[in-house]
Image (cartoon, rainbow, N blue to C red; front, side, top):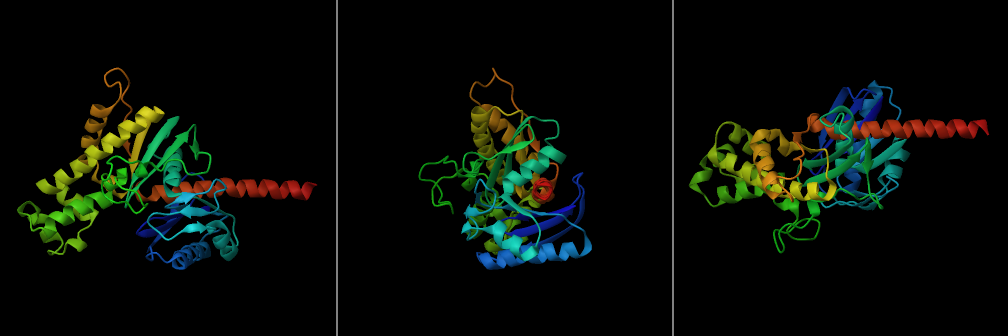
Length: 326
């Protein structure tokens, strides 16, 4: 068995996973702000705790940021304070196990392709909607990482010149219009303004806009609140526009949408599918790839990271055997 760790903008989720993708045990902690050392401590504590009860061979870490081609360092994270952070070496020294690091969306995409919605698909584009937007390409069961390990950062494609500012340093990035952050921003603005259409959302957060979060908006939409339904549809329409661009660029066999915002299901994905089809280049004369909801839910990231770790452990054992046989 191996341990996968999924580090997002708001939480660290870890799990022990077997070779069939079955989660044996999992644990969750809140992300400690922008404190790099505290996030590293959280990873080590989670791994140590799970390792006490399970015999694990390696650890995989999915990190929200740009990871180098050696899958060892986080070069930059727009939502955490990592800058050229040698995460594999730092964690590996402390836990005494083989460690592999990759982008969290790459890990999620690999998990979905191996054990989830992408099983049997050859060319997958995966988009993960959380605090921001992560993305990945999986071709014939392998994550395509690009020349420097940084492919798939779809959330930072510019869709609105001079639009909303993004933590990455640019303006008008796709994730500013089609993510959990975008959903919360629009809802909180209406609550702050005292808009009568936001009365239900205002009730849910006690009038404190800062206490209004994505899952509350999603639940309000499920309960039939017109504004919550409209806000999710707005995110879905922006999502569809971006997905149409990815279809034009990569011609995938399917698109998988995961992450916390995807929990809204068809409240999000039906507007997404309609918008994507309306925005496709050559629409009407090409197949429309299916837009699928991710099947593994919040476990996708650490399941994929654990699978990466398993491959790393095998390579490590093969290398050790070769050295011994010389």
